[in-house]
Length: 595
Image (cartoon, rainbow, N blue to C red; front, side, top):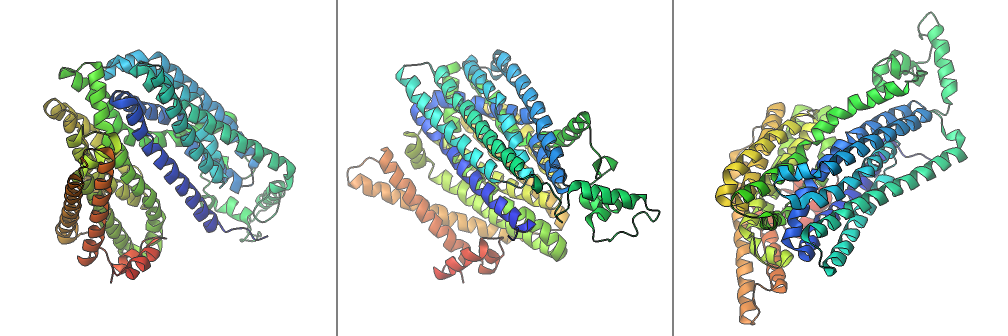
């Protein structure tokens, strides 16, 4: 039977993981809407105060080890050492279990201190509940890294969807049960956080099930532990050893033999020193040091994104208390502030899902097409995502009130939602620029940009929240994300010598967004007038849904038409987008939107 090529396996794996990420992120984004609808803004505020802290602890608990496990398992498997791969997952599981246990203990016992730093004691039960997830999630992510190293993406994909599904299901069931018992806000919020614990536990059990099946399959087929050319590891080691003993240092060996490359060209195989050569076995201590040395920088880079949300957790509730609100009122206000978060996350989710297509495309353009191909790829991606981000920001801003009523039942915090909508533009461009930089090999710069943006966010929160309340915090977020985008784009432009035309960056997008916004607002006002004539109040939830959807449809249609007519969207450029571009171009030509 013909084995799939490496490229084919990578594409299949990318598709599986991409689809699972989209499904799990949609579930995760929309779970916050029933949380607010059922629990109210107070519960919503407590949950959104604790959740960024929980995500930070998960990153610290995993410590970047899943990626390290994936890398070194893949290397050892390529060298025909499945026993070393199994040893890596055993050692990493012990390490992750120990780290998770320590982090869970610190989070549980330190909950009152963390609550004092936040400025609200109502978050203590939720922090303690979230701490239990640290017993399961780090181990689960380590097992995902193991299977990814084996180029088996289905276990990761299935566990992601299962984890999110269980998390949302348990959260909603406990919400309904606790509300029926007239539980306090902090108890209901802790029940909602229990969903993360249940999701982590079931996700871990799912991964353990896949591990059990994998081990049984290995035992049933002991002949599978061979090199790609069909020879056993012992045979290859013996042959290489005999070659090394020759006086010619391997000159008599066929240069097409992989053993020759392992001895004379170790860098081609990613082998940095003697400890990685065939036949050498690291001690357990060496493996632990190697894993941590690789994982810690990855962990530090991963902290940048949740740090932005964590800034709000430790500043906004305390600043609101300083303006005279009590603990409950500050949590209600913070919950209203976070209403726009799921909507912005949907936009950033789309950007993140599409950005993974540009990383390999950028690397390929650099290798095959040279500087000009890289420049064209970067310019196209930035222009498109800038336009998409602007459209999302403008659309959410102009339709903020009906969307707010549609999703949350009232118009509270509409002004803050409008300001938070503006973060879509900065975050979208920041994400795609970071992906392009990573495709060029600049992996640390995006993390530093986000860290700088987090510092600016904290400073602006202190300056704006006392004057503008939660609207000030939302405005601070829009400025901070735009800063991160600006830093990433500036570095990218310097690396690829990109000189964008002012018309394509400012003038034409402004024209397109203005036309889109007028169409959306005009349609929404017309729909409200028609509903009023029928005696239906526009502030009713069902009416708000109709107004919102009609406004979104009209705005989207005008956006596509205006982008095509102004030349911001051309058939040739659309066809150049990796994977899906040609199909979209063909579809839009049929609709006569593109020429």
